[in-house]
Length: 92
Image 1 (cartoon, helix red, strand yellow):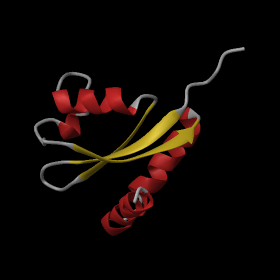
Image 2 (cartoon, rainbow, N blue to C red):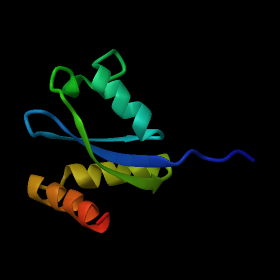
Image 3 (cartoon, one colour):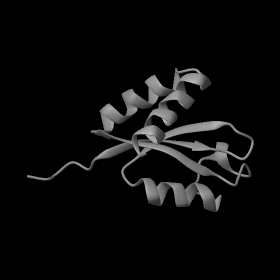
Image 4 (tube, rainbow, N blue to C red):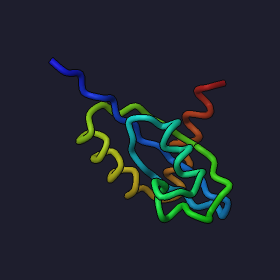
């Protein structure tokens, strides 16, 4: 029986202040790919650095991650910033 990889949702802030939402099984690796601006980085993020990883959330399965990504992408900017702020406060 094989284990399914855990999936994560993440938000990245670009130098221009825009927020990018994505999903991955390895946030550190994916963020490094985005920062490099190479072929594996998201086209949207190329040339928009420096980038800052603002938020990450363990979601579960790939399907769950995609559903959560769609839900977060539908949020307003203010709602996304509130989500980030809640996590920042819980770390204190």
